[in-house]
Length: 273
Image (tube, rainbow, N blue to C red; front, side):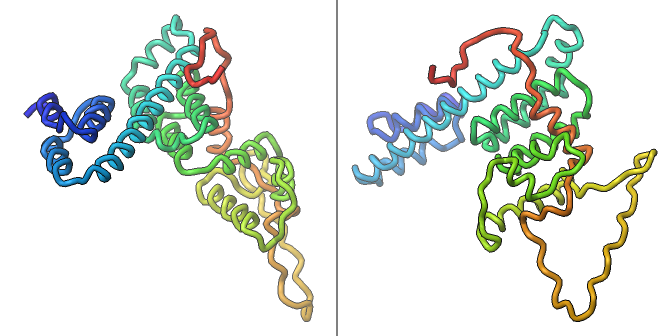
């Protein structure tokens, strides 16, 4: 049974069948036997249940259309920033390796749930053509990071970038956050955020290096005198330990936060203007 035959088996005279067919047309096909399933459901549902299902499918169709528009706008913005007359760039765009990155990005599009994340994705795919600073394996990791981390994570990464060390307290101030209690949910979230970025290999505590790039051991901290009581817990907004981006973190900023200039002016289909 072909996809076309399956779609025509959807119930034609009820609201559910009409909207469901529209949703399946957007997704480009149908799952086998889905027509029979919809027919059975439509005959069993009451009018109220069919109205509820109709609203669900209408929302689903809108969500799919919005996603398609976002993908279309992203690809247009990428091409508008590339010199396709350049033979090297043209070959890169047509390569199986680059097409694999694009497919991976669009398969995992749920990670681009905001306009800011969409721009990060766009920048990564654009710079994946324009520069060969990182391998495609590393770029795939960057795409995963867009899905794994929040916008607040990326604000912190941006605040750390291009510094020789910055404290958590200084970062909190730099990203424009106000004063909060040490026992607040915001403070707990901030500490969790740094654990995420540290275990993810994106940030680390700043350490001096020698001429060859080897890390120099920190001098041992002075021992606390006896009888001074328990060691106080480190503040979420500590102003002693400094942080820096790892090599991976530095390259992520280059790919995700470095926006190439438009070569062609165009109307953004996602713009309200």
